Image (tube, rainbow, N blue to C red; front, side):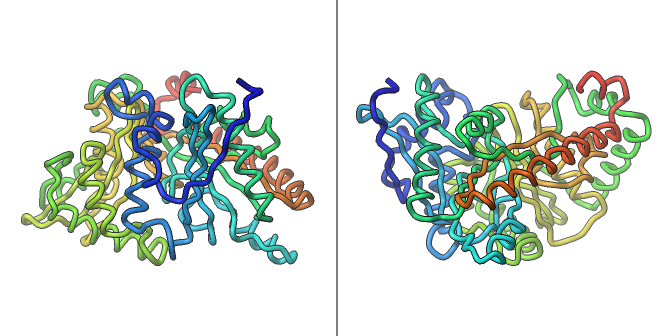
Length: 395
C-alpha cells in the first residue's frame, strides 16, 4: 500500500464531498449508531459554518479542505483553512506573527487545520479505519507541501489528539502543549456524589453558589432536539451577540448558523436556558459527543449572582452524569473553573514554519513553554477542590 501514490486534492467547499464520504473518515464509529466522538468534525457541523457564512469570503477563514484518495477511494480528509488573522483559534500565536513581521516577513496568510471557533480536542487528521498511517502521512505531507509551494509562512494543527501530535513530531513538525480545564466523571451517580468527593470547604462553596444562582427569580431548563423552538434560538442569539461583542468585537457565528444547527444537529445540542417571568435572560449552549459534553457559548441580558457558574458548569455536570458521559470540556482558559471541579489537562497542537531561523526560535520557545505549563498544571492540581487522596489517585 505504501508504494501506491496517494492523490491529494484541495476542495474549497464541502458541497463537493458527500456527507457519508466525509463522515466515513471523520466519525466511522457513528455508522454503527450513536453519537460521534467529536461532533465538530462531522460534515454537518463544518458545512453549517460554510452555509451560514461563518467561514468563507470576508471572514478570514477560507476553506481549503484536503482530501487523500488511494485507488480512487477517499481515505482521509482534514478541515484546512487559509487564515488572514489569528482570531477564533484559542492557541495563541499573535506574538509569533508580530515577531515575524517585525523581522520583515509576511506571517499571513497562514494555513490552519482546525475546527473554527472551537477549542475542543479531537482528531484533525480524519482517516478511514485501516488507513491510519498512510492517511495521516499523506495529509501532513500534503499540507506542508501546499504551504511551501505557495510560500506561506506556516501551518498549524490545533487541538489535535496527543497521538496525532506525536505522529506529526516524527514527521518534523513542532509539538506544542497548552492547558484547559475539564470535569472528569469518576463514575458519579449524582451531583451529590460528586460533591462528596470534594474537600468540605469547596463542597460548601459550590452548594452556596448553586443556591444563589437558583434564587434568581425564575426557572432553568435544559432543552434538546425538538424541544428547542425558534424563540429559544432568537433569545440565545441575543446572548451570543452580547458575549461575542465584548470578547471578540464581533461575534464569529452568524444567526443562520443556529438555524442550520436546529435543522441538522438539534439532537447533538443541549441548550440550557434561564427564564424569568417567561422571558429568557441567560443561556449556555452545549454540544454532545459520544464521551464528552462540550460547553461552547454563554450569554445573558441580566446579571444574577453565580448564574454563569450554574448554567455553564454545574448544569453541564448534571447533564454529563445523566447521560453517562466521561467528561465535560468547558472551553478555553479560566482558572476559576478549578474551584468548581474542573481540573487542568494538557491540550496539543502541531506547527510548521517555513523559515528555518524563525522555526528554530519557536522550537526553543515551545520547550520553555512546555516546562511552564507542566509546572502550572502540577501546582493547580494540588490546589484543586478534591480531597487530597483522590487528587493523588487521579495523578
